[in-house]
Image 1: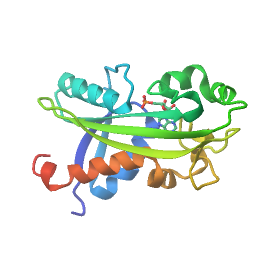
Image 2 (image 1 turned 60 degrees about the vertical axis):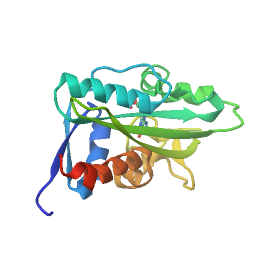
Image 3 (image 1 turned 90 degrees about the vertical axis):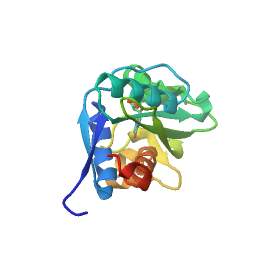
Image 4 (image 1 turned 180 degrees about the vertical axis):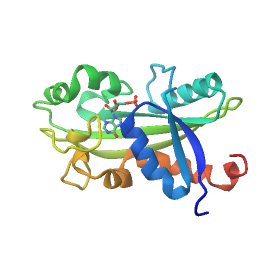
Length: 195
Ligand code: IMP
């Protein structure tokens, strides 16, 4: 319906995620309303577990239906590291540290995974997953995106995710996929009547 949009609270303070969520959700008529309330995070092996836990906790604390998104970079030669610890590793080792760990590695294959969890204050979370495969480049390039984007080259491409426009990134990215799955459900018959 032109002119009408259905809001959804998005608990995050990450500007990159907010911009990407808006690009992906607006064609579905969903307006991502950011607020800084991700709050509780757990250590877990999968981004889905982290997102589900955070969404469940935040929906109860803030007493509203909302989404939380958790994502991570999984590098094959490093046994999936940094995975769900990507945020901490980005802040500590940084891109240079991860490139140093891969010096001499036989494989540079990697993937990003994303999980969007939706939860209502009295309900249980629903999780939507996305993934993009690729490889880690030998040096950083590109000015767009955030986090490890400058060193991640999606499969079948030559440019890093940091060299893509946000629209190009969202068309192929882990977050694009998980957000589109969420949007289809949120605007579909099952959820459509409730929100
Ligand atoms: P979290 O989902 O907020 O826990 O963040 C995970 C970390 O993974 C971020 O701080 C980034 O370093 C990295 N990351 C997650 N998604 C992306 C992405 O789309 N591009 C680049 N890095 C990402």
